[in-house]
Image 1 (cartoon, rainbow, N blue to C red):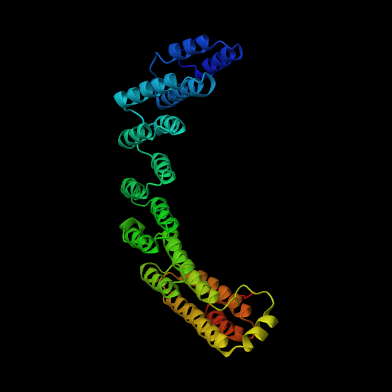
Image 2: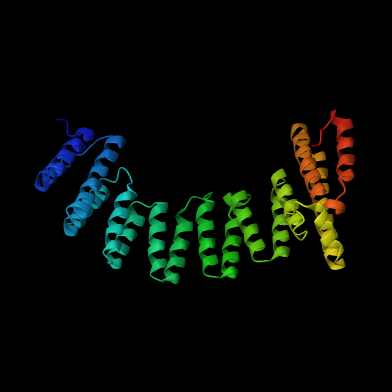
Length: 335
């Protein structure tokens, strides 16, 4: 039998397990692991055979010391040859120590994993462990190492970091981290990161700060989706108008309070100003196909919001814009 035919080896091991022959299982594992593989696929199968061996000792044979020994041998082997990274080994070894409540050993393994086989999952498990232990400062230190390790365009690590600070009810620190993140050249216009930052300010009730972020983002990118989200944000400020299905009841409710009407009219005017600015920008765009497509989308979205404003809306504003575009580009149909 070929030492690299791992599928057959696993079937052989399963057969010995069914027979309850733990000595036979260990003998097969040890024999199969004697021969080092060559290619990437063979190395992957080989390392997972080590993991199967460790799992067998930990969960089936219930021999924690033997499982520790297997993980130790495997990590030394990977460190020695270093052709491929297998963070799964350090993660599984650390999980064993966490289950055994030996957190110092878990830290040693996770630190070794970060040094020799760094991966997102290692940082996440390490941070989760420290968080459960109540070590907030250690978590913050790990997050700083995490974002420094991650790729330049990796926005996920930054968002995870800010989410952690939010969970600690520390909005100023979260805001500080967001500011650092959006200053990174590779994340300068990252939509997911900016969306997360803006949503955070909205959730904090910092609407003026959210507006500032939209304005800064529009200086960096004129993507049509940014204009639309900005307009929707202002529409959301219209005291539930945007989300209310029954327009008649809305009108009655608003007319009972003059201050509400003032707020509504101010927010609606902001929505219109955003659409006008976006429309004017794409009208002067040097790419005709982009110009027509973007203005089409803006007008359709604008019309939807105007209708949602009930008696405060003015669809004629959109129709007028569409008519001018229609004359120039042979028509745009509004819903």
